[in-house]
Image 1 (cartoon, helix red, strand yellow):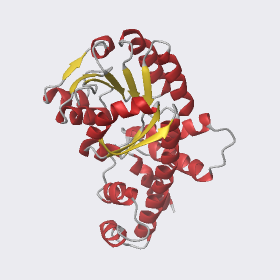
Image 2 (cartoon, one colour):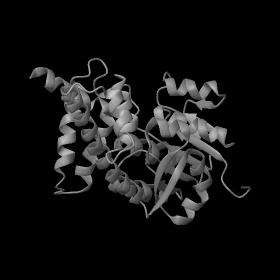
Image 3 (cartoon, rainbow, N blue to C red):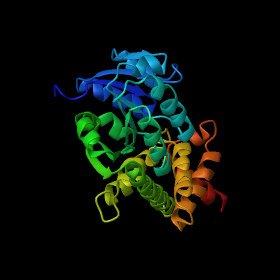
Image 4 (tube, rainbow, N blue to C red):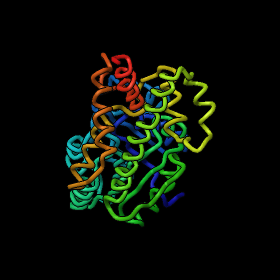
Length: 297
């Protein structure tokens, strides 16, 4: 480990970023955090464990060996990484972006950072807030293989299934495929529970009965459990899922994905039915689109 990078800056201390930051500390890495807004639960959670949270990107990245980021949307990532990170990170620093931004944006980030002698990996994740907390994420990585090998011990601190997917943008391409599975699996879970309600089947009994059968899935076991408990708090928000589905359209032209289009419509409906939380509900809130339709009949 002596030749491996040890100092980490983590940019973006939301639900996912704060959990990963804590796992880096548990694994013994020297980590510092930054978040655009300091008054956030994730920032407080990190501070409570004695991790320094600084008030500028410059302070976070200027001494880091590896800069991880998990930010909002493509403009946010480009502003931070191609702005202050590119300006203040040392030459040969490795930047690992874990935001879902799509293949085209990842290639653009790679090319822009390379101009400053900074190496880049796109490394979006799947596994939700549970995987982030437990350190069991699947991490889908694109970029130079040698750079991936150097960062691998850090990935192993936050993930269980780390996959090298190919050159820059390949991790993002794989993540968009994953989001198709997630979106359509949520349709299956929502429709199953909608049918159960109409036939007066208890949701928790359904989970016990079908959770290990041929129709079992991560979505049923994890998000289905939340639906059964009436828990629509976010592990992954509707707004972020809708952003990811938008990225599919932006990255692939004339893509015939009718299941994705249906999921998009249902996520939109759920957001409008979400009251104060709205599009900040978890993706399991898709069920509300079904339950609302059933009540209207």
